[in-house]
Amino acid sequence: MSQTVSCPSCKTPVEWIESNAWRPFCSRRCKDADFIAWAEEKHVVSGDSENADFLDTPPD
Image (cartoon, rainbow, N blue to C red; front, top):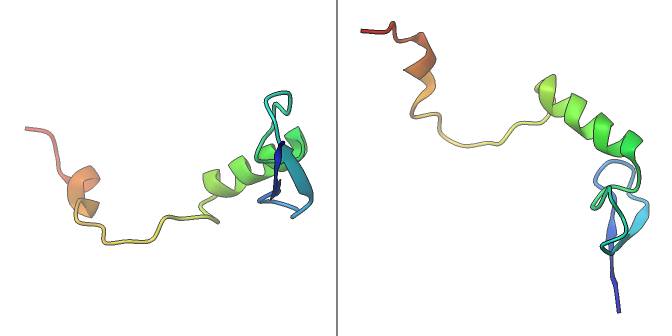
């Protein structure tokens, strides 16, 4: 028995089965759209940025 989930991009029902190479997405198009959104910082993980100054610190 397979589980059905919603595609994170378009909300289409998707079977969670090994033969679905794009799971949890319904297609490569939705997977790529999600990746592009992360790359363009449209999606972010919220939380404290305790190491935010790490990239601004000059090397020793």
